[in-house]
Image (cartoon, rainbow over all chains, first blue to last red; front, side):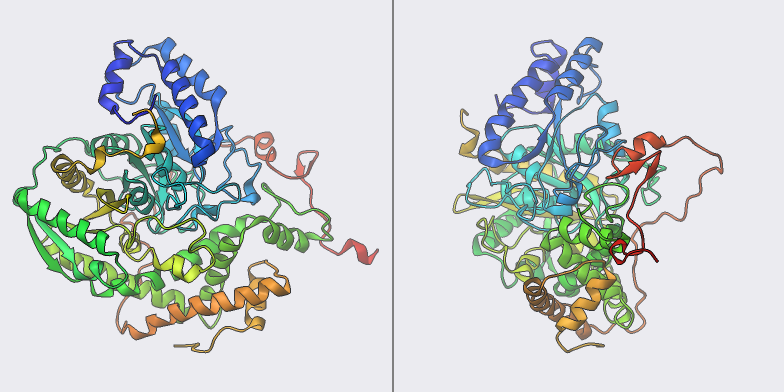
Length: 487
Length: 105
């Protein structure tokens, strides 16, 4: 089986009517993702026994007809801690780490009878845009196995794209949900900063990190955000704002809505086919009765520099905890305590993580703090003000998610600066804490192209409303990669 | 801006020591070039006039939220120690702070 021809509501009905048991669904899902894992390599760990056990328990209890997610298997990015299930952040330093608690989002999944089927591959500590910096494996794009799936949540995106699961969780610090969603032709949402608890997420950039869902459809995506959103006493940055039903108001209409198209998002370096997909999308919104205005976000071009200073600074602080003492890898044949720190970190972290730690340490160090970290934080304020101005008279912003479709495995991995530039269209959303979505909007030489939609803080409802209208008016989301096989 | 000159090997070694990392000669050369390249990108921020602009360190609208000052049972010691690389009698064991190869002090 695969998940190409179904959606959450259809599967839920089958489970409620007992046409399908949670155990059958789980076993078929396991068979599918294992068969795909040779070609795609989306998973670091597949949790057979526990998944089947959980499914049996849910069958025994009975599927709650009011809970759409009961008995549905979901994949989870391997930087989200799962009790008793190895969690590595795709790093050697956590190769054997076995968490003793569940992240809040995992607690919420389990409380709603969702089955955690396995842990997906990512760039080490979520630092990268191709999933190539993983210590364990390289994940391949289901649309073309010689291409990257994007990153850092490449495994989660790839398994949803290949029809291996209905949904997966990822994290997004500078585009790590939206860019892989764009590269693999699925729907990915980074919620507003504070909408979802970060408790139990292995921290990267704490003022930027958010958890969010990958799905094949906009409606299923909204349904998964319903499950994981909300205030959490363990994360004091999580918002106590009321969580609306994100699936409500999906009526296919954007009539009268005001759409902004920033001219900076179609500038130099953006692939012609990507531009075309975005301009076509603008026309689709016009045909649906919205107005589209060209606007300016003048500080966009400084986003990459400011983002890499801030995220690396936060990372250098967060990753101090990996010292070889309390958990994780400890180097052998050490002479003294200092040696444990230095050698465990030097042998345990990969090159990209070391680069970020170095950039962050430098940006925060005496004599450079004002010129780098503080300056970046000031530019961040200006980027936020750019967005505020546009949102004074617009409901949402559209643009490309990434400047290009998926690039080749190995193509950019030796040039870190070039790799960083790929994030130019996604990082502003994290800097401003806004909600952003990527959804299928076209193809370029057989590879998917994503449209990015950006809304005001805590206005995910507009994101989903606009995304749903676009999805209903187009058929890009119904295309599936051949790797999926027996469609 | 404070530093328009390219970062050199000595600076990279200094930053590595602050970050508790070490590099061999080949990696030191590679990192010095790559970091220099990226710092050039960082230096473009000096073009932006940020006079009178307040920095943003967090975008949350939450203020410090205090919990009740009551003891709660969180994690058990035994479970917490399960992931430690080396333990003894309920403690985490580490090498001596003084270099053992230098003999008795």
